[in-house]
Length: 148
Image (cartoon, rainbow, N blue to C red; front, side):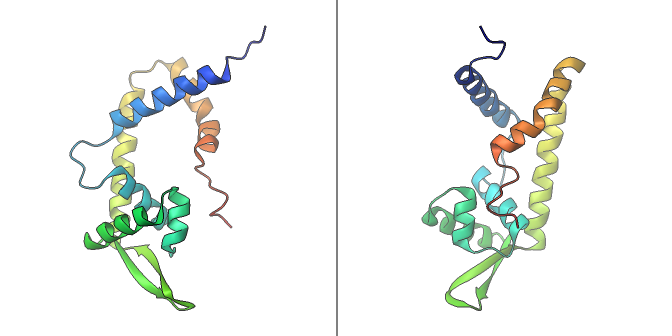
């Protein structure tokens, strides 16, 4: 008999908990979708970035990125510049408004998570804190394919 819980059970419980946590910290009445915000944050981190590279980073199809970029551009969150090496391609980067949107969204989500931490006792909070590094790794927060 092992002291470690079954990986499938842990995976199922984590998937359920992560989904519910995400719904609890999602802003109500947000002006920007979760997918748009994720793309905008990726653009802010890796700009200038080509749409194809953004699609790979976000793990979505090219047509999805095209729609997201069109919407972000129409809101003034991103700007595009021609790729000097390839006339068919372009780069995108955040505008000041887009960078502010990313920062505001991160701050608001962190504040909601902090409120949820108030529901935990010290031992439960310590367990969450101890798991952060492993959860970041599993989530691909430090995505090696995009870092140099």
